[in-house]
Image 1 (cartoon, rainbow, N blue to C red):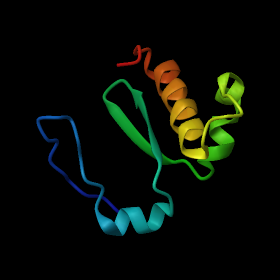
Image 2: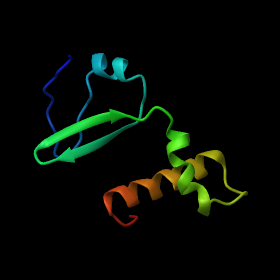
Image 3: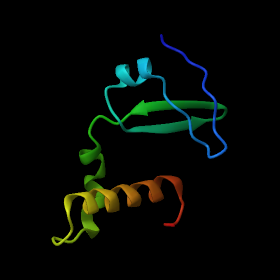
Length: 84
């Protein structure tokens, strides 16, 4: 088991230590919160995870625009936040 204590910045950001990032083998994670326990889990296939959010994409969009739009919709749904 690998553990690490990290500081949360004033913007709510944390840096995942390299040793843990290497074990996760991904650059995308999601958080699960239950009571006072936070679990960080790797997303192995972001494209697959975003497939259900791709329904509002247009054929004239670039791949980056499609990914950003789908990701934004997924985040809004999971967090309940409106777009900024």
